[in-house]
Length: 109
Length: 115
Image 1 (cartoon, rainbow over the protein chains, first blue to last red):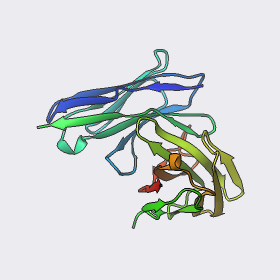
Image 2: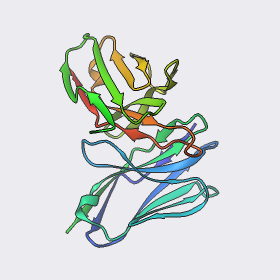
Image 3: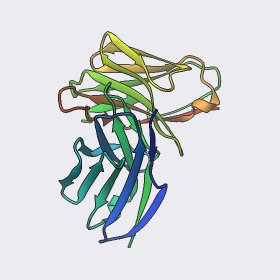
Image 4: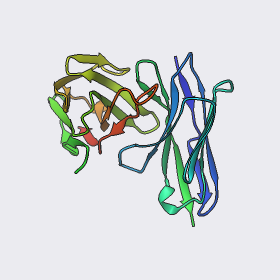
């Protein structure tokens, strides 16, 4: 089976940097996804890591370490609109995604 | 226009009623998925379809059925709704060949309440 753990909630300040962690136990996976979801809205794709290392996309970066069973999403120059849930998901061989329960990020002025 | 649409967006029904949620997409993707989202439980896969002739159960398919009427349409039915099926339902699509695992694109969701 697969198990994914994320902090339930985090708070950060506008303009700051925040790191959202995701740890997992799994027998195998193709890649790790990060999605953003504003309250009551659809999840939207942020990033995807297949290999170990850092993937950077503007203010968002995602890191994967397969040997440590660990990923993080790094958000820089936080804006109020970044207040949302951030979902970590493992992509399997049959293309199914297994989602974590998400981290609710509150950005404060 | 939205690439993935869901109807209805909100629905309140009573226990025992049959309900159909519909999903349409203009992305031209072969693969479609139905998820439900509950507070504290995250997104869970109900059914998925990799093409019109392919239907597969996800982790929580009991009490649900699906129909893939065309490449662009994937419907989810609750044959006899019960209160613990109250949830936010999402449809998603993906296109094979973009990597080891497809990126999935989600519709706006249907909020279903079963009284």
